[in-house]
Image 1 (tube, rainbow, N blue to C red):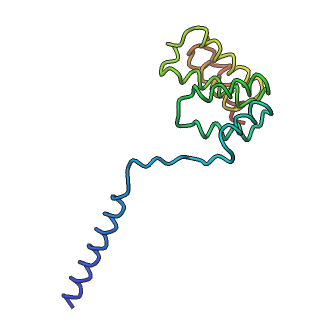
Image 2 (image 1 turned 60 degrees about the vertical axis):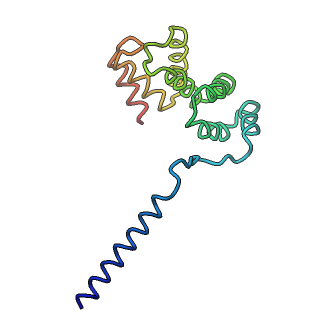
Image 3 (image 1 turned 90 degrees about the horizontal axis):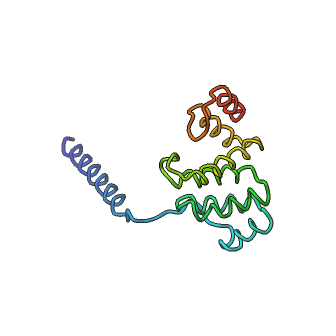
Length: 159
C-alpha cells in the first residue's frame, strides 16, 4: 500500500515536470498578431481613403496598434477631414499626443492641432473625445483649467 502511494506520487511529479518542460520549451520570441486582415493592407487602406470605410479604418487601427502612431495618423486625418468620422478626430489627437511622453513638450502648433481635433470629436459627441477633453479641463493641462466644464464633458461622455 505504501509502495503504491509512493509510485503514484512519483508518477504525478514526473507528469508535472513533463508538462512544465513542455510549456517552457516553446519559443519566447514568438510574436503574435492581434488580428488577421480581411484583405491585403493596400486594399484596406484604399477603402479608407477612397470610400471612408469605417470597418476598414478599424482594421487599420488594429493592424497598427503595436507600431508607432505615425503610420496610422495619415488615415486618421483623412477619415476626420474628408469623412468627418468622430472616432478619427480622437485618433488624430491621440496619435499627436502620444508622440511625446509629456504633452507639454509638444511644440505649440502640434499641441493646438491636437486640441482642435479633440474638440471636433467632442462636438460630434464622441465619448472618448468628451471624456479626454473633460480630463484636460479638470487638470488644466494644455488648456485653461475649468473643472465645471470638465465634469460636464466627462458626464456627457459616460452616458
